[in-house]
Each structure stands twice: as C-alpha cells, then as structure tokens.
Length: 386
Image (cartoon, rainbow, N blue to C red; front, side, top):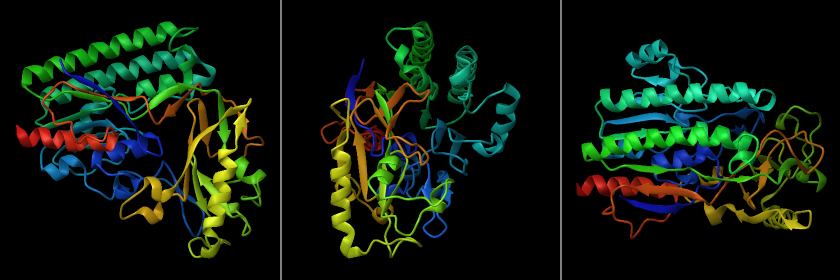
C-alpha cells in the first residue's frame, strides 16, 4: 500500500518554520522564517512574519503547476497564485485568508472557521471539545469540496486540530480522563484519510501524509528568559517586552528557544562587540547545557547557528538554538519568576518522531534526507518521472 518513514522537523521545531520549510524545500536561512515572531533591531517592538515574509518560492510555484493549499500554516494572508489558497493559522481574518475571492463567499456561506477557540481549553474542556469537533467537521467538508470542485495538480490539506488537542490534553492520549475524546477524534481523522487515500488511488495521484513535528508529554516548561536574567545576560527596565531591554543586556531570546547576542553593530542598544562574540556564545552554551530538573538533563543540545542554518538569510538567524530533551517545553516568556514551571499545556513539540507516508513505493528515496524540508524534492521527482 505504501511506505512509512520516520521524519525530523526543523529547528526551531515550530509549525511556522516547519511548514515554511515544507513549502520551499529550504531551511530557515533559505526562506527567512525563524519563528512566529521577530524583533525590530532599533525599536525592539515585536513583529510577526507572515506568508508575504517568505523569501523563497513554494515548490508548486517552482514547478509551475496549479495547486490547492488548504489550511497550511504560514500561508496568511493568501496571495494571488495559480490555484487556491485558504490560509492556516495564524489567520485572523477569513476574507484575507482566501484566494480567489469567489471562494471567500462560499466559505462564509458554509460557516467555515479558520481555527478552534483554544482559549476554551483551560477553563471549559467540554466546550473546547465540542468546538474542536465542529471545526474539524467543517474542515473535512471544505477539503472534500476543494478536492472535487477545483482544478489542481498538487493538493495540500492540513489538519491542525490534532495540534490543539495534543497541546492541551496530551496526558490523555493513551489513557486518562479524556482518552475517549482522542479515540473518537482519531476515528474521524482516520475516516477522512481513508476517503482521501481512496480518491487519490482512483485518480492515479501520489498520496502522502506527514507531520511537521512530534509530540511528548510535558515534564516541565522551561523559561529561557528567566535563565538569562538569573545568569546576568538579560535585564528589562520594566515589564512589557523587549522594548524595555537595558543597554547592559548581553543576550535576549525569542520563542521557543532562540538566543540572540545583543550586538553593538546590530541592535540600537547592543553592548556586545564582535571580539566578545565567541566568548559570550560559549558561556551561554555552558549555562544551558548545565540545566537540570530533578537531577535529569533538560537540554539535548545547544547549537551555534552555523551548525544548523545555511542560506542567504543566515545573518537573521539566532546565534544559538536550544533543543530540549523530550518533555521539556522551552518558552521565551519574559515575565516568569522561575526557570521551571507548569501551565495548562500538557503536550510539547519534539524534533523527532514526525512521520512521512507515501502511497507510491517507486518514489526515489535514495537521497531523501529524512527531514520535512526534503519532501518537496520527492514530490518534484515523482511529478517529473510521471
């Protein structure tokens, strides 16, 4: 029936970065997306990269074929394309999330929604589950409609409800209070996948599924900025974000665990000279590699940027990236008082444990790197040989 392969995500192992790599076949220094937020070098205000920030064409644009991109994260706002785009998260405005315009009217008429109301999860799980199933049902309806009614050569549909369910209730994934919710949701998801698989088989199309990262139950959240503060690398004059960073701060972080040295020739208030760069990087690496929790290791590896990023936008990359051990959810929260803590989240992303399934065993796999950014080359090779 096909082949199932293990897959690694991107670093950082977050959806905006991973799906940008899936779309372009590039690592973050090749497409310019390093996370859900960035900071302005002069004002220190946060900015939020979107689809217009993507600096490399998608693989379907390179192939020059008509494509449907449905609910794919990091595709908001929808832009003019040869085909259809209905954006995935983060997508606040349905009208700006749909191309072409004619499909906006259809989406609105069917009650299609862009995302689950995640805020319900913390205080009203039953309302959250009801909302989750309702949004997923609309997602299935829209996916089927686009598959059957639009002309395409590449069809991409993403399911993001799994991510929401796992983040908030992963402690029930294999048993526990809400286990039956997982069973029912995956029963419905399996039904959708089987229907789409059979449609693809009937149409002679390559069918594949992949996940953009794995998941693990959370042992503890790890607040990277608090660690930077405690070690004397970061100081904020007042709460309210990095716009209050002091001129003596040597480093800061952006989600989930991107560390940037506060360089004098790069940032308005940066104090770190080029001659001090390596010493500061090494000190930071040692700080985070030494973190422990209940006697156990917290950090799997601290990477210098040149170890994991390559491409024309490498200068925009974090100077270090911290990959946590499975179960440790690294966050950039600026106003936490302790390094370790818990919230309403129960599941965290992992770099490994993603998957790729291909319905066609003849797809050339000999040079496949086993990472999400390599999938586009497999699709391109398949379309070329067929």
